[in-house]
Length: 249
Length: 249
Image (cartoon, rainbow over all chains, first blue to last red; front, side, top):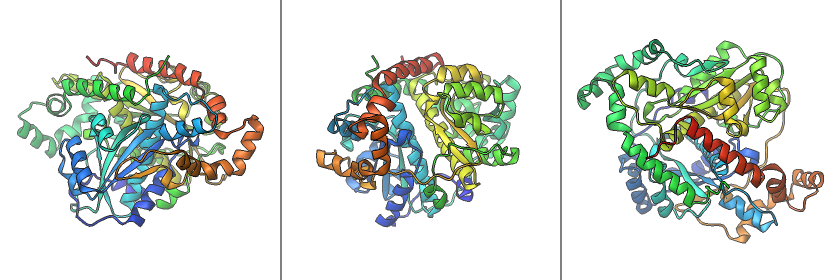
């Protein structure tokens, strides 16, 4: 397992080979073994193989090729719908239409997703997380018929890899770990932590292609822009409210 | 690895044996191999061993014994502080003071946490997630000196197990998985999905101890009450705002 964790890289090119139902079952079972708040299992996993539905999801995920290429698409959802229905059928009054409940369910769903991904990689499959699940959550809700109480929080492409990319760089461990308490970063810390990343061939290439002076500008100006973030923040908060998780009074 | 995933159970009793720095380093490295949005690594891990600080954290986590007993406490945080500082030092204007950025960073932190937990279990250690990290986030921020841009989203107790509990029950797979699209639950589905859980010895015991008619009532009336959820929803939203993630206009 450690080996699987240390060999993880996102796969963006997939073979057309299908993933067997038996294999899917194993991965999904692995998902359900993740820790879950109070053993409530307040999540759902939607497994989509159908080409037409995947084509619609592909549009939500900014038409990233891998979504159509990978034979399986999974959407991990915060889900209090099932739990609420159970409460109502059992003379119990659910109080889970608030933000804390949404976040609790989101944590549940995300731990499940990471279990599924690691199980998949252990079995020779490849995965790629689609950060875009939250960006276009409203459209995903329509496409997958998610009822009130259900919010997509992560999605993955899944299939057999048709590429063998190297590991992605990471910041040095001291850059992301703090001992005892948080020690805030001074200017020299930042320089040191980002030095290797900034000196890499990949960065040099990106600066040339994007015609930017610094790598940070590629993030702020091209990849994760303030105006987009604000737009999708509003949309996602609207979704959380519409799905019934903002009754905080 | 699959074996590790399928054998997971939360550990609530720990030996006093310390966890070596080398071991911690391996677990933390495993954490950093998790998928991360745009390879931004917008998270931090705070590793706390000091008894006095852990005692304060123990209070935040509703004085659950295991927090004091386990020699290591880890707090996983959504963290745009480091990334923002880097941007500012590199002539880039960060636009990450909004809700989408918070949620993106929270996803990053949660995937890291699950990698650390599975790596720990693979190495013979035990873990227990503390769902309470979001409940008392404001106090955790004070105790750990978390600056603006940093929000705790999960915490774990970590150490060598001093108990060997069995696996916890889970709903049948069909109860949490949907194929192609979401198929909403009818009353009979709910009955079927919860049947085994409701018929278990554990449930019978809980009903007797709590003097309740249904298991669902134990959740709604005792464990996860509406008024508590509302209180902690407000508090957590205030924290998200105070830490600088609610500038959505």
